Image (cartoon, rainbow, N blue to C red; front, side, top):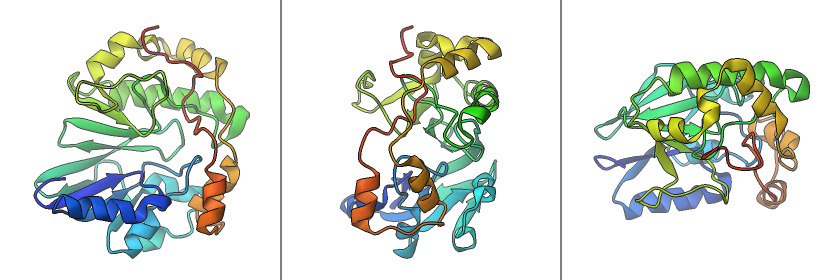
Length: 249
């Protein structure tokens, strides 16, 4: 929220009204709804918010997966910027979790990484191309982390879309951490590429329940009502690569 305007990243369809109400309570207009990628664990609310007058934004890099509604929303290319009040949101391509995975850098101070990097783990690489494509996706993730994320100033905060029971909150109660702290606490972020790939592929939890149907819904290839969406989303999201925390390893 800044200057009477607000944005939301990776909104859930089930909470569409809540996002609008929360912005109103803060005396702000919800102007943007950003998706970081085609989600496999929940039904995106970007299209619903767009229908309510909020500008829905999806990564341009995700469109080739078969998005059916791309012409109805704004597509964000790497390096594009958006103004929210006096704040600037910059699009940062960070493929790996998916080929279209995109982060959003807020005023060069906080990177919303979606499912690419969490405060206690990194992304799993097998939800788009399965086991066969996971090694290449893990290498893509490594390059994104090293070249696009960890190259930012060490005081830049990282905020992922999920957290596990093993995650610890920052002093302000948020699940965020500075890049410098993550590099110090998570050995995976300082490994050589092949060691990183081996680690990431070694301990992945079960894939999210119903993930293929959720992906199809988020591509616009499948339509579900609210009750069906609720059922699809039941169970853990399991979008991280590890079953246990990688922080403090």
